[in-house]
Image (tube, rainbow, N blue to C red; front, top):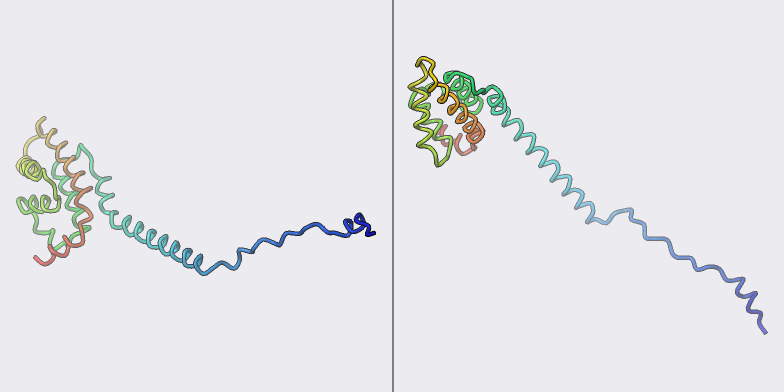
Length: 165
């Protein structure tokens, strides 16, 4: 008779095979990693470019104040425009041509209201200080902030079409 207890003692525990090693990675993971790196690089490049492109606009918005005289607010707008448009184009803009330029850059449904405001600003620029002028200064300040936020930086196609004129 065979002694089963001695045979049982000779048996070893069941040893599970080692887990599959995850290195080296499959080719698909390298493709995924490359795509993620490419996306991060392109996103970083786009964000830095966008930040730099809006530098002039941010500086102009910091210079604006509700208490600035009308002429100074106009000067801030013109300085901001010089950062984006050719100086040869901006040099000749005064009066109605400046007003038209501002309205063309700002694509909005309220162009008639803004045209009226800009005409009032043009007429009141050299008037004595009154309470009506304070209200006009406040409206012009709000317009300037809106214009800087929506019209600058101009779209690339706007720049090229205006350069061809």
